[in-house]
Length: 275
Length: 189
Image (cartoon, rainbow over all chains, first blue to last red; front, top):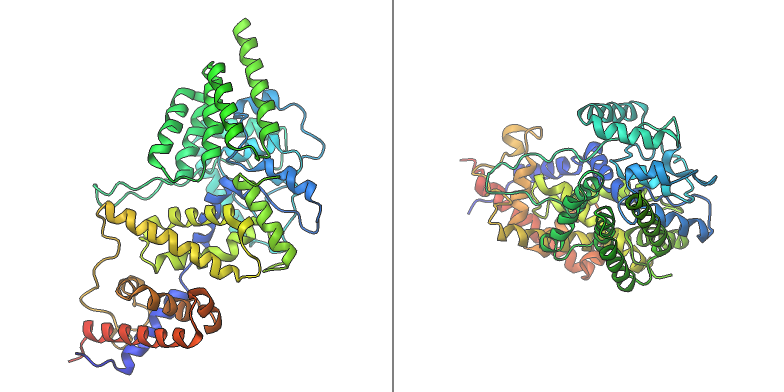
């Protein structure tokens, strides 16, 4: 057997040094960007201890229980509450990525989310680079950009309309290795499909339990499915599914919000039918 | 109010951390991710999560963190808790990967670049990943936490739940095994 030498020791230490220095800020931002769509719109207030504000900002989770689709945000959201402040407060140094279509909805339905600027800034150039990248993506997806712009325009002219969806995953090197899509990104596709093709959105949610038997975004899936049913005019099914949602998640803070949205959407669809 | 959704968990969890003054006095979710994403990414990577899947698996870890924050005991070191989650998620990932018959970690290279022959610029972390994959989990964990994360041994012992002395002996054994691998793959004769 080879006897380790001090040169091997040096080489090993060099490997460790390299490993320590390896994680790039870019990579961390990529992770943040992904998570942003899920939960990072929810910012805890700095210097506030009251739980009321915290409870109200629960509603703002981007991905979850916000049934209002992008178009209806503009139509139904009505004048936003005075307290709406959310994460639209300018390009934030703390949250440079306002990701995807989700925050748009979050913005419109937010009751009150104190947005606090971080003391820790992100360097100007990085922020700029991120904005540039977003603009590039916006060009690539003009339709989505327009929708986002419409919804956001009323809220704030300072907000950069974000269309930054997930960057396309790198192609798998081997054909047989079908890369497993993340649960969140899977459901995000359903969410995006809601407005244009609710039947497809519903199919995606039906497929969810099969693909992710131990998935964690169950409430999120249910909400999307319920909305898809409403949009398909299957009010009865929607009510049934909403009822089972309520019984399955009796403690959810989103019931009131959900009920209101469902009623509103159902009324809307009934009116549409009458017309 | 019961806690059921991701957002609720996250906010409730962070509120508890705040109350205890753990980590930072007030930590936003962004800051939580910023603080621990590098740690999570490295931990996953050196526990054989393939580079191409790192983002997905890391996201999975944070979803679990957000969900479970309310149950986290703030008296415990948060890093240890996060590490435990990483380990479980990485293990599940490796199981899934085995089902897909993927090769996650390339076989140990024939020749490990040594500092002597090519300098630290060229040393490849892939080689490190390959070598680490050959250690058993106990040793690998201690080695990674000590050498890469540079955590104090007392904290490492807490994370792996063993006496400090045992952690030291695992570290020594792991280093020895790594050195043997290096000299075996890079004979200077």
